[in-house]
Image (tube, rainbow, N blue to C red; front, side):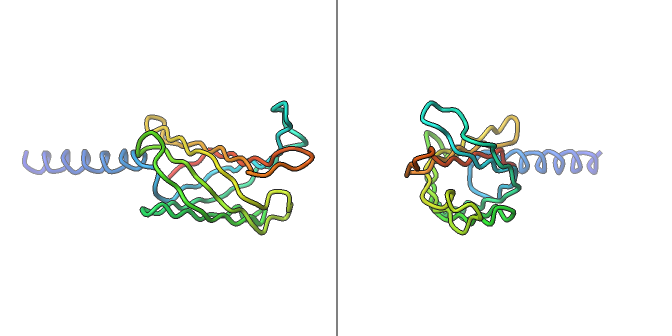
Amino acid sequence: MRYFLAAVAAASLAGAAQAQDYTRYQGAWNGSFLLYFAQQDGGALGPPMVYPGTLQIEQDGTVHGSVPDAACLMAGTSADYVSPVNATIDLDVSGCHDVRFNGRYSGKLLNNPALKYASIRLSSTHSLETGTAQISAIIRH
């Protein structure tokens, strides 16, 4: 009986540790990153491009990541948004094959602990004549 209780306790702790992965926005994230241009009316301008990518958010708020197939590198900062589960993110994106995606971005990471994923929506802080560059992603730990 003692071994059974120890096994149940270990399984419970493992489940709690896994659930905690989504109680804060910091950590290693990966998923599909959607890069596109939004027109002033909100519609997409041209076909969106989807690439696998990663994002690492450190405990001190430092952010770095990459979307290798698009050659994009990301670096910036994050801070709590409403609660420690969500974040505001400011990024500098550089090195992209499509240079229109290079530049400064601002947006939110909204975490969904129940469904174990987060969504990111970032908008370029500068507009081009053709629209505003956007980066969106569905990411997981």
